[in-house]
Image 1 (cartoon, rainbow, N blue to C red):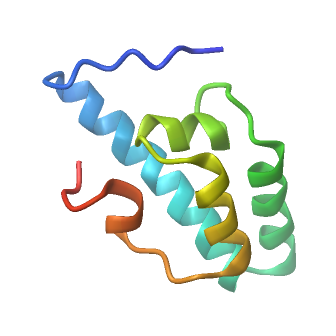
Image 2 (image 1 turned 30 degrees about the horizontal axis):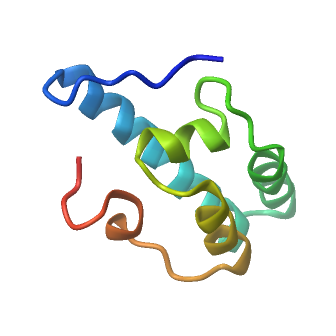
Length: 91
């Protein structure tokens, strides 16, 4: 497992958080409006909840979000915004 050891002022931290957020947004889009194949693949990624680098749980933790909450939001198809993922300020 890749530990999350981000330095707040490191430019790479911002990029990693953006990628993690983009993966979560893509999963949401695939679940709510993708083809059946994409929907099933995205749900599988979310349900597997891997802590491995760029797995679902890892992505949630990379942006300081509760994986269970984000999982519920994605599965329910609730409206998700950048603020949901990144808080009041985007990375």
